Structures are given as C-alpha cells and as structure tokens.
Length: 272
Ligand SMILES: [Fe+2]
Ligand SMILES: [Fe+2]
Image 1: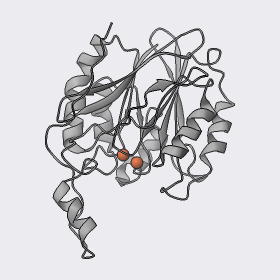
Image 2 (image 1 turned 180 degrees about the vertical axis):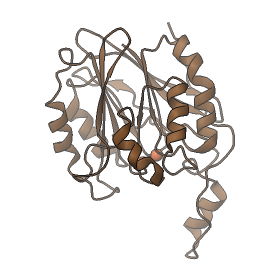
Image 3 (image 1 turned 120 degrees about the vertical axis):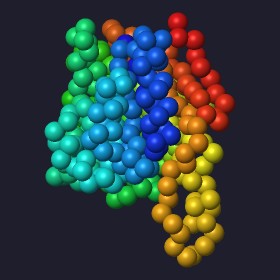
Image 4 (image 1 turned 90 degrees about the vertical axis):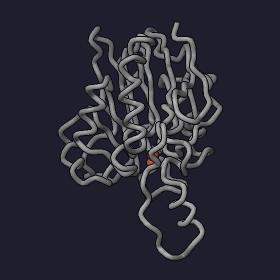
C-alpha cells in the first residue's frame, strides 16, 4: 500500500499548500490513501466541518487531530457523525468521537488509522501505552488489516520513541505529530515498523511553530497578556512522509520524508 501522511496543517497558509499540492501528489506517488493531521487547520486552533470537507474533496481519506480537537466547538457533533475524522484514543471515557477508523480502499484492501496522545508536557490524558496496547489487540497486521498507521501526538521525544518501540512489528508506521518541527529520524525499526518522532507541520516556518513570530516573542518576553496567537501567513511548506508497505505482512518497505514549498529546504523522494 502506498500512503502519504501530512503533518499538522496550520491555518490558511497550511490549508492552501495542502489543497494545491495533494491532487498532484496522489497521482505522482500513485497513492492508495492519504492521512492528514488537521488539528490546527482553523486559524491555528482546531478544525471546522467545512475544512474537513475541503480536505476530503482534495483527496484526504482520514483526518487526525490531537489536543486541539475541540478548539472549534462546531466540530464536536461531527466527531460522532464522521468516522473519517478521529481524535486520540486515550481521552476520557464519554469523549465524543473515536480514536481509530477502518478504511476500505476501492480495491478492497483495509487500512486502519489510529491516534494516541502522549502525556509528558501535555494534558492529563489516560495512559497512552495501555490505550495503544488495547487497540492493537483488536488488529493483526497482515491478517485483519493490510496496513495500520498510528498518529503519535506527543511532545516528548522519549515518550514518542518508547511508544514507537511498543508498536514495533504490530503496525505499519508510527508517525509523530504535535511539535510542528520535523525530526531527522525517519527509519524502519527492527520489527519492521516505520517510525519518525515528528513529521513536522504543514505551515509557514517563518514563524514560531506556525504562529506569527512577533506575537509569540511578545508572549515569551512579557507578563502582560499579549494578543491572541494567529497563524503566520507566508508561503507554507508541506511536510509529510511517504510510506510503502508490504501487503502480505503489512510492514514498511519504504519510508521517506517529503518537504514541499515554502522556506524549509527539504527533500523530495523519487516517486518511482
Ligand atoms: Fe499541532
Ligand atoms: Fe497538538
């Protein structure tokens, strides 16, 4: 299976580069499915039903979120209505929405996408290790699903690496999100699971993690409450990873970062 996973889309600049580039990328890389983290798509905070529709129409199969999932209140009912929009598994019982989705490709192959959130420097979420174990017990890679992709939404590199090792050999890929800064550790773990600590954001990098740098600086340098953060609106970079899995085992065969447009110089793997 050939998949693309795009990191946290931040604001209008991020949405624009995603919507412009995705249709061509789908064709160029002969993609079977596309997963997009959309937790910052609406002005940097959350996502709206309309933005979800735009992402789906442009060729997105699954939208993941994160700690910002509820920032736009209008998305709350949508989380129960739209299975292709997921939030982290390890939120309190009774939280709207689901932490995983099974997608049937047009050719019948099955892709499972799930999301788990870290706790270090994050909120008081349920144990992500236990939540991931419980979810993985429902699937057998290569038997009940052709591919399984985990969106690992967390801050601390240590917690992310530990969760990656927990899932190694049981999922196709563990892809880090949330920090908005790409890491250089895209590799395939010993058990065959592709892993990256963070894929990076899809947004304007002339910013502080996607937000207007002057406001962010002011917030760090003064006790006086500053203006609310707003997304930076310069040309955005699309940060993603391309994943190719073995349909028989579900494990990773190729895993390569992709950085397109904007100020972040990067890599574009050969689509062949
Ligand atoms: Fe984010
Ligand atoms: Fe986040």
